Image (tube, rainbow, N blue to C red; front, side, top):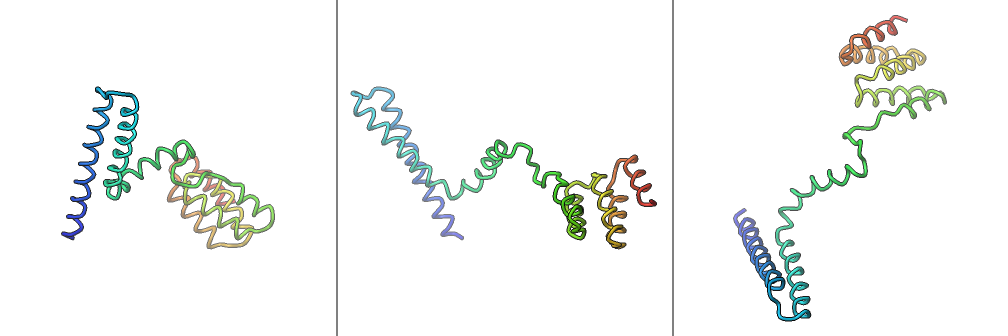
Length: 164
């Protein structure tokens, strides 16, 4: 543990020294370099040193910086991403249409994991469970609906469906 802390302190010391030197070099270039060629070379060398100095800090800072950077860019790529699968009945309805009812029922349960307030998923899942004769799945859906549906109108509609 001590040697790791020592290595980090030494590495950060080198990085800080390199960063300060690079800033001084760049400052000197912009505040009175005698000719254009030496200014260009000094600026290029200063920026290279600045980037190299940043690599000394990278092992400790990368995990801290990665989360916000990933969230920032994923916001552009996936603007409506909330960490759960998008609400989509396509696969479940495809399974029902093709007679793959057990797989359809499984899809309805997956939908309800992410969207427990979705009355349509309870309704369609209950229809599939009844058509397969799976009383355990129908009972599980009913208990889940009564426990998780917050809207009183949706609960009433589900209770009417359950009796039908």
